Image 1 (tube, rainbow, N blue to C red):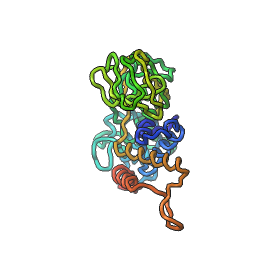
Image 2 (image 1 turned 90 degrees about the vertical axis):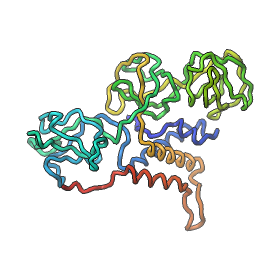
Image 3 (image 1 turned 180 degrees about the vertical axis):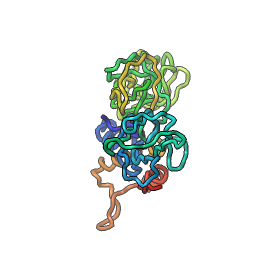
Length: 350
């Protein structure tokens, strides 16, 4: 399984906004991966949902009431089944709770409903006697991300979508009950053509098209060999930033095809879900990690990329006082995420 990221390749490259990173996708991707894992190491949490069956011993050595099972790092978002020594509990037999008693994920422990006759118990052995099927992780917040632009069978890994700005490389998207991880993008003809000549001037930022509704701000388009970033749309005129992502400024003639990176390369059936067929125009949703987590993942990725491009020579001081240059803002952001989201060690006591 591809390890999920908390920020997209596009977000990192947009933040850098320098031509020398335009083709450094491998470096940027490596920086994003290490930055995302650094966030998890700092917080001892995973900020994406994963469907799974996980097993717990009972008795398990926890110093807790016999009706309470602490989940440790296996925090829950939701539960579909709890099986104790081969017996499936009814939904009314157990309660999901968290340490601060807020009734929302992530849930830190499962309790037997003391008003029921259910109980945690052992079978022939104490090992793996409780099986919990559910969605594990910190949260499963989502935002709309356009629609499919074609019907999709259960085996296709190239997915045409309506809006390339809504989904980036590294995003987790969902169609129906299936989650997919976006691992790449390629260009797709938008069906639109240039409705007026463009000069090879950076100030030529208005692109005329037949229908402005076919595009969205934030989307990148490709005309000839030049990429352009759509910053705004006024009727049937796109307001763009020219020579985007390290491409070369060029002149373009009326009628030129306009492409956008709307074909996604995806890992199907990701994070415990099952690949399935989906109808054209099916609504897509994008997983949304907490904003502070996204911001720290971006900052870590930027720092990793810039350190690598400088051969890790971004140093200040001299002799024994020399140290790696890390911005104060990054350290402050790490502290904010640690305070807000870190899952600290605890004694699982009554």
